[in-house]
Image (cartoon, rainbow, N blue to C red):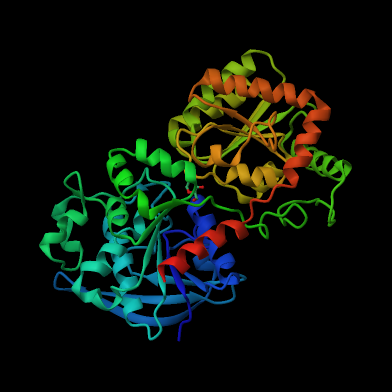
Length: 485
Ligand code: NHF
């Protein structure tokens, strides 16, 4: 028998499957909700990823759903021996998810059957929940991959028994809506034709829009992002404005157990375990981290290092990086840049070639490396986030936790979490326009701050004390669940 008050339906969950912040949130929030009394479980697809192949699984449920004259068999499995603080379930759908990537893979790119994959995922989950003796009190759906669930349980006859379960839909990233043509309508179980409009946006079936229309409550991962979606959301502005009464912005937190400068297993040296820190403890920690990193990567220890970690795509502002780095390095300022991430292939090539030209001042690592990411948060002087869109942003929160000052564009969750260092409670540097000029001015400001050692150390000490842990954000979800129940 399962016991869960909330079932989180997500495409990612750290450490089993992560491609970005969605994975981090799904891998941390449930733990904090559980300790706040809302026992949470997560269900994701069973991918053919290394984490899955390394673990053994217990078979919990064997099921099949019938659609288009075909049986679609699935199983629900639970990994054995994990050190997770919540139950993680996986849906095994043969042929659909047993592949090396989440949404696609490095060689073949985006999987062309993602629509079929994620629809099957949602139907299988609802079929499983339907068969539970004790059903969850809330279905919490994350991003468009779970966006059809609120509609399906409201209108599809086969899921009628689930109709009364409140649904929460959290938007981590509205850039992806998962739209597909009405021609594929038969991938979904039958529903009355009069409710077609509750699936539709611009003559397509739009899982994101449908979730906004049908879920009982909508959350975005920061209050700022919610307001931005009402003004700019690729055609969904009117929908977000219209539904704003059931929407709320809840800023993400970070998992202080995973991101802890006192215990982080990816670091070779740690902050001492104390209640209150002296300036010296912090400076020793940062210097130690920097020494190790510069010797590992062959860099200069005496200059400030600005790091970019993340997907090399426009959304994250990666397309202004080449011009920005050129401008800064050509101006002769003694600053160094480190880039860790992958994304657009033209950026891989361009940044790699620039790293030869600016050897010793620009270090580029294409790919995803969790250990190096932790070391960079701890060792860098600044973290750069020139994002075009940023629903919440977690990197600035990880950076703060390790005493690294964020330089961010004033957008979405970045604007909600970073305050200019010259102001009261200041913790970073902000710039407004999505332009090389504004970003360069912010970097100049960082350089000045770095050279004013007293001020720089004061800001660093202050940011070490800031608490962006999940406790506070989880309590806002608890409030929402209580209201819905
Ligand atoms: O923090 C987790 C993450 C956000 O801004 C981030 C994003 C994807 O783009 O909620 O989701």
